[in-house]
Length: 388
Image 1: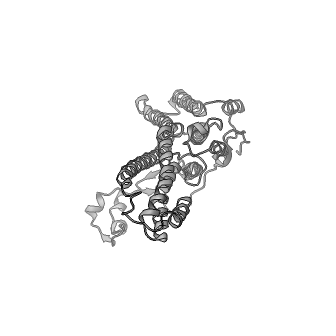
Image 2 (image 1 turned 135 degrees about the vertical axis):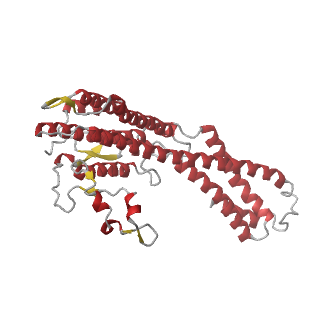
Image 3 (image 1 turned 120 degrees about the horizontal axis):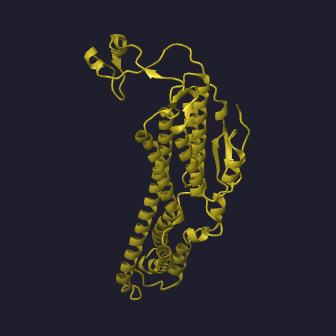
């Protein structure tokens, strides 16, 4: 808008008689100005590409982190032994509940650690057009975790004052996995809680290690901004561009309205691209266009909550192979975007049809009172009471 007003004022007050390309004062300047605008356009496009790549990489790493943590925990739950007695069942369930609590706490700590910055150094980490208040906002990021009731208060106190929470929680999970791989089931010394060979047990450990590597890659994006010399040079060139463009438009365009319109469109387009790049360059935080880490954490908790409702208690099996081949089951298959097609028993035999064990019977909802979701604020974590 200032450039547009400047173009109007110059068009009305300066050199009213001679306008257009025949103006000797600006005619020879256009060749040089074309090279300047080319360099500025190249730098802005380069800046936008870098910002978009950073934003997309940040989103990819956060989803990879969530997937690897879920894969690690779900695999460990599947590796648990089949308890035959009530004490053994309680022993296995205790491990599963503690594991998903630690996973929820780990993902929450990773999100908070990535999005949070020291307010005193935020201005150095951000680009030249942002302020230290962005770092202050990141400290107000509130996350949800599974209920921490029943966990050791001394451990939570240590975690609350630890400078690197992600590393502490990941070490807890590593120790827990190794402990349960050696721990004998109550009433059956020959079976371990995690009853799988060590090479197979190494897969969830590798998933956890990959998740931590993704955390460090996301930290790289949050901690290392776009190089300051590039950002400052683009900003200075834009300021010069915003001053020179209305001068040229006021002398090259005969109409005052068209000079103002041309100045507004050109300068607004350049500045819009610059601010878009500056906005998406730092994808973590509390700004409207930042990644919604609190929503990711909420979905992560709800996934585990739903899995605990049914996934641990129900088993999947083929109720009857002859029934699977019958025409009642395999006569029609609804396909996405296509009409139902009749299937022959030979085709149906090649399909894997899964039925819930005892399908049609009433299923009792398992007690998961310990899995309630509570609020967690990164720097004021307090243990809540156990709901069991």
